[in-house]
Length: 326
Ligand code: PEP
Ligand code: MG
Image (cartoon, helix red, strand yellow):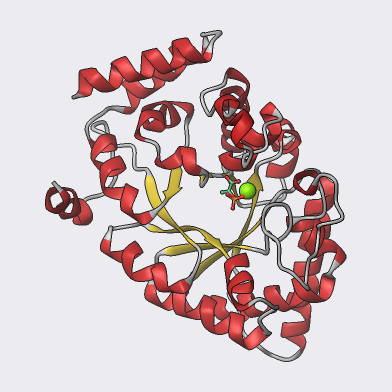
């Protein structure tokens, strides 16, 4: 079974009617890159850089970060690597650097891009390390938890400052480096048309998008039964994000857990996702599934699902479809 799935490595994730989906891997540390390659990923769709910080228990300096980013980029050759800027705070605490124990609602608090925009030195150090590493591969950068255009503009302006500083010192970086935002706050999905004007791609972070859309703490066992990717509100936000992005011609990835759930694959294809990023081990199975369907039937399925009113109906419908596929 495993051998059979791995033999898919040389084949693209393409539907029977020729729609190519890019299947990428989520990683937390550079050591995972061997597994990414072994499972035939089209690239890295999410490098959660905060783990570099959390494991060492302090802020790694620019050169240490540069070495880690460069290693991942070089290992992936020319395949695209999307590195997310620091997503500390919320559920990801770093004692001594970001103590959020005094926050009543850390999940709604000082985290991710908010933390970086108020710690510009930390943010700039990471951006400098990223830009310096960018000449060694095919790098894209994305910002987490963006909730308004202003936050995006502020982050982009700091990125421009760092580029200008490197230019002044004649330090090379990839001038075509693409920049994206994560869509993981409902307001970002609702204003995707606005955000799309300023970036090269979107990546939907369903772990947080579900949490914030449904008002369910993703780490709270007591309400875990309400945490539902197939909720109609969540599905509409995904659809809206894709529509806005495609209208201006930028691609949409998904890098939350939902992207690696086989039960969601046909629906996500039908909703128009261009890329899915997941744990490396899930890639072969999802690829096999994509190769067994046509985009047409996925779109039909998505149309039916979007006309439904109830998560239970959606789940029964996609489960039935999966059984038919075998
Ligand atoms: C997400 O929110 O879906 C995501 C991919 O980011 P994280 O799980 O690291 O918050
Ligand atoms: Mg997230």
